[in-house]
Amino acid sequence: MPRGYQRAPSIEEAATEIPAEKKLHPNFPFLISSNGLDDGYSDLDHDDQFEFSIDTDVLVDAKEVSIEELIGEGSSSKVYKGLFRKVQPVSVRIFLPEGASAVSIEQKRKFQREVLLLSKIQHENIVQFVGACIHPKLMIVTELMEGNTLHKFMLSVRPNPLDLKLSISFALDIARGMEFLNANGIIHRDLKPSNMLLTRDQKHVKLADFGLAREETKGFMTCEAGTYRWMAPEIFSHEALQVGEKKLYDHKVDVYSFAIVFWELLTNKIPFKGKNNIFVAYAASKNQRPSLDNLPAEVGSLLEACWAADPKARPEFKEITVSLEKLLRSLCSDDDAEDQTISLVQERVVYDFPKLKMKTTTKKKKKNKVMNVMAPFLKIFRDCIPK
Image (cartoon, rainbow, N blue to C red; front, side, top):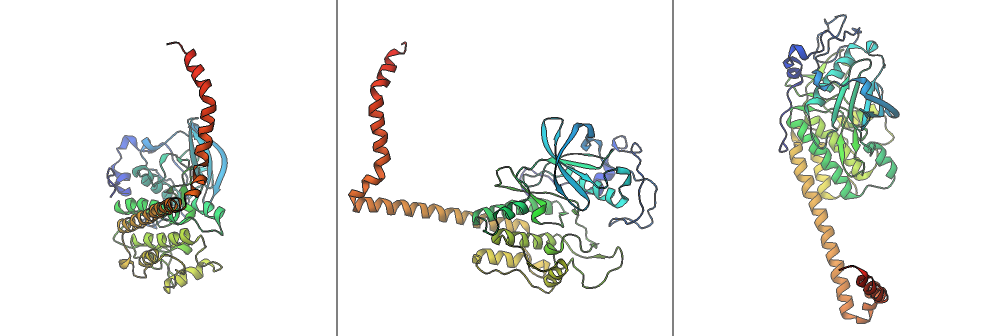
């Protein structure tokens, strides 16, 4: 675990340990739909109201959040650029439908779980949580990442590949963020380029969109959680499942998804391009993987380990982080060695062919000529300065 970070309290603990006087109960009663319940909740839960168990310290007044232009849109929410308290640029995700009373109980529970999770984690490679609103709309406010999504950045470069060092640097940022999450017992379950945001200089990545994230449990969890193209084969089911049926898997599903993202970074191609999502998931379950052609051997070995069919054979993110750090150092040292070689070759050429020295000193001679012309004026200027 990175130094300076502490384990995030469990989401269930966070919901139960909040003092009664700091709970939103019964200040904001919401009408709910009993259709569709999230994993971990009983089908017998048919209350007419849903009580949020969110610490009021993480809530902000909706009046303090100004909404500007739309910057993203998903199936259950829209993302806007905004300002918090008129000074802090933020990203504002508003859950649909925009009227809080019309949001289903399932969506409210997912919203609450995401807020509780985001409010308890802090890492340089995870988008920073600012606050949440539950009235009049369900909103999550985070720092504004002005570099846009990793997905859009890759599209802007395509069909050209990304610089190899940049690709590995991005992968290292992702792995560090995931190392922190997994070390705190949290599974993201939806790693993909559109859920990763870039800093303004587009040199670093932060993880975002924790709508499907949850705490890892020893028991069964919701099957087919995530996006098929990046989904680990153990989550995909060949056979029809009963409503609410769950499967057994762990945090290694994130390692598989990371491998697919890393392959995209290295190739700037769509994995299984031209195939529909269901086919991709089925192919993955049959141990088909993207091609490793034209990739460095060290990188290929890491990818094969990360997307291994057996989850137990996949490395932990702390091991992935170490491997990527070594790869990045190796590339940087190779570049330094190349620069030194070029410099030595140039020096040798000048030594063996002195006449070529004129080309390397032209700028220096021009500078000396200018200084010779300016010298008298500089002397007069110095003489005029009071002593």
